[in-house]
Image 1 (cartoon, chains in turn yellow, cyan):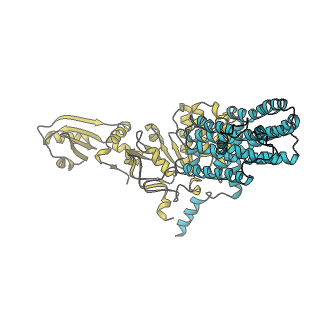
Image 2 (cartoon, chains in turn orange, purple):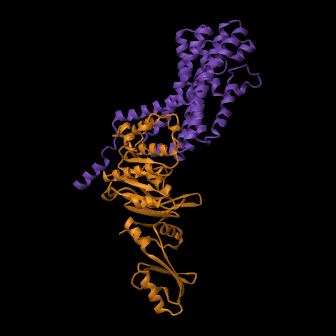
Image 3 (cartoon, chains in turn red, purple):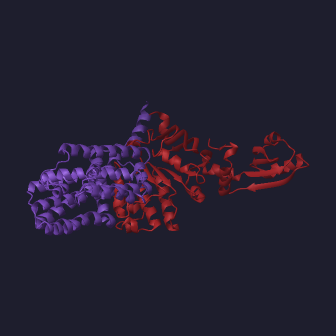
Length: 308
Length: 279
């Protein structure tokens, strides 16, 4: 074990994974740092679940390495630091809620008591009920209790708040913040962008098996703050690319596609520089739109790496 | 490695090792809840705990007793045969249905992601199936003593019970083989596809015609039954029907043990390999 591996609690380095003809992950690097809440975003089929599976040792990479606490994720010693909440799992309906939690607690060296985990996740009220009799939202809360009962240093939560009503979701958000405050790290996959915005220190966007953007929430907002300008012009892409405030330029179907942090200035300059300038479109995106745009352009190889 | 690195590493690794006591506790907890949930599942507990008892009373004690006018040899044979029937189900269906369901519905994946000791998964199910078999044996022994009167000594009851509780293992292995290869929906059908021929070809319920008798060798129930009959000093149904009463003629006890143990090891090893690779 060396210094570098300890900087990251979990790490994928140059990992590729294919299932038959489908490339699920295409040489991705992903690191989970200590004490951070990392949100992994991406459309269905982007490779989020595959990435998590590799970090948990459920699957093996075809190329590259997956490390968990500097070790192979296949080792129990590595996974004893980890709590897991999966998206689709049916627990034995006959076992009571408290029993489910007691069972998971037994896998860890120094777990919370089942009662403490129930209390922490506000599930004490149905601790004695058979799991099969719970509502879907209650089941998610119990799965959350099972994820935290081992006092994990790193939590993997796959779409944890799907199916929760508003108070339950608020409760879980508050608990996640508290866990991070107390030193835990969390990897969260979610479809809810507001969840990532509300909780994440860092965001990674996957699409078609690649990391297409990563950075802090603030940096992601900065991407979003950029405007996209599309227009028909005779100006060369290289000329526009040299202007201040212009992030990237490319020609697509005869039109220039410009990303700029100061759209107003760039548009004025376009008017001034090219009399034949027409078909102007300026897009400003929210995080949701930025996310959609990012994930729709994985073929452009225009990876926006904003992490320093 | 610098002192700081070392401290960091210790900080990270602290708590990742388990004491032997906690590890044992993980196995015990897994086993306890596997047994509890099987006992609480009516679709599993009722057929496999009550059915052997009811069928043994009806057919093994009342019907066979009246047809043989209370013959003790027939009573011994009936006790041994219904005991084999009783220990087949929990293993085959407990593994077949539960493993297939847990594979299909994500529970096995979750447990593989969690730090569950890997052997705990199969070991807990094995003990569950043996617990069910033990309960079946206790109820059958009570019925035999009270109603069946096969004239067995206490040592024979204990011996046959232990034999059949261990004898659940090959049926667990068959169930595991099915459970690792079928979906939750098709597992009961496939388990029945093995269970019914095993039962009927085992020669447990009626004498098989001479032309069909070679097929008996395909059923693990046949070998387990042979061992039990030998301990009880009873003939098989085939022998009783053909009038050649006496100890079993098909195969030595060692052959029976080798076949049952070999089948168990082969199917279990094959299935564990698949579980580890495919999940």
